[in-house]
Image 1 (spheres, helix red, strand yellow):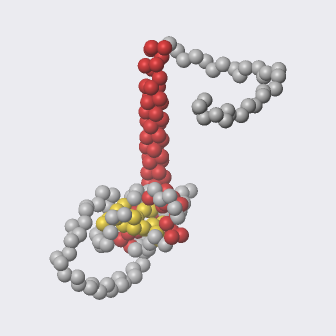
Image 2: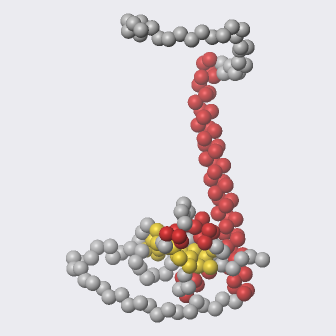
Image 3: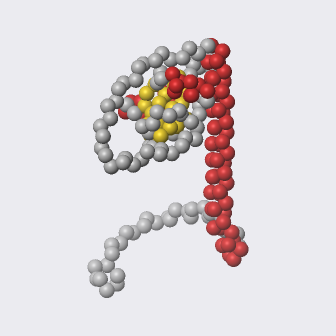
Amino acid sequence: MARKLKSYQTSLGFYDQAVAAPSMKAALEAWGAQSNLFHQGVARQTEDPEVVAATMAKPGVVLRRPVGSTGPFKEHPDLPTDLADSGVNERRSRSKPKRQAAPKVSERERGQAAAKFEREWKRQEAERRKEEAAQARERARRTNLGRAPLEVHLGPTPEVQPAPAPLDRPVVRTSWPSSPSRL
C-alpha cells in the first residue's frame, strides 16, 4: 500500500514552493535541495487547506508561486507584478490569518493521490535516466572525436607494453651537478 502523503512548503529563490510527498526526504529530492532545509528552518510541513488541496491534486509535482504573494500555487507560475513600490515606504500591518483545519480527505482520495505520486515519481526517474544516458553518449562522442584524427594520420594507437623486467644490478643514485652551467 502506498504511504500517506503530506504537504511540504519552502521558499527558495524567487518562489514559494510546495509539494505533496510521503516524507521530508522525498520533498527535499523533489525540490532538488542538497541540504536539509527542514533542519535549517527554511522548509516545513504545512496544514494550510489551500496548499494541501493544490498539492494533493498534483502529488510529486513541485508547485510554485512568487515569494510574498498569496496567489494559488501553480506548476508554471506568473512572474510577480508588484516589484517596485510607488516610492512610499508604508508599513503594512500584517494580521495573522485565521488557522483553518486541513480539508478532510477520504481514504479513496488519499490512495488515488498516492498512486499519482508514484506514477509521477517513476516518470521523473525515467526522464532523469534518459538525460544521464544522453550525457554519457555525448561524453563518449567527445572523447572519441579527439582520437579519430590521430588514428587516421598515425594508424591505430599502440597497445600498452608490459613493464620491463627488473634490473640485475642495483640502481646507483647520483646527485645533480653543482655547477650551474650544465643546467
